[in-house]
Image 1 (cartoon, rainbow, N blue to C red):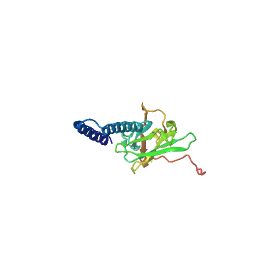
Image 2: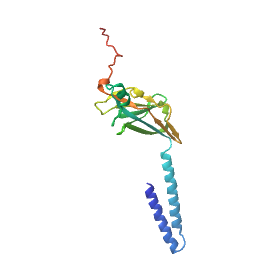
Image 3: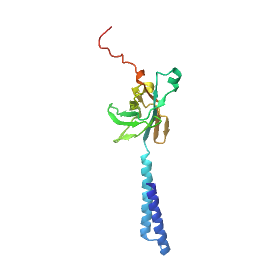
Image 4: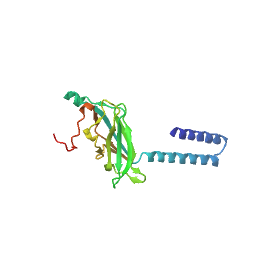
Length: 193
């Protein structure tokens, strides 16, 4: 977009130089200069407006295998490409105001960006949560609640605040192998042995 503006301004300057060689500067040239300046000012305002009031949410998704020895289990996590992570923001009446999901890259990283105003309403970061959704890795696709990945993490303390941008970098979320899945013993069918 900026290249088109620069090209447009260069064309105007060439036209003005031709007119100057031929005599005095005409009203057409002054109109072109005014239009070019107006275009530059409006473009800069539009570019500046796009960056205001932005919330960035980022983090990493890893696989942790509980079948390894303690040292490998603690230090042997690996990133998972293609995991789905979601961001859900509620309004004051506990209705979903905004939902977005992102897929992790080769390094297991996700990054979501949302504006602070959705349909004219201000988004309250403290009413937003991030959670794991799914993993494409069949050897590591069991949700865990390490760092709150399964139940969701509320956005509490921003990692970075700069001008109108707020950034939250979350602790890594983890999936684990099917062999590490714990059976759900919280529900009973009424049978006692």
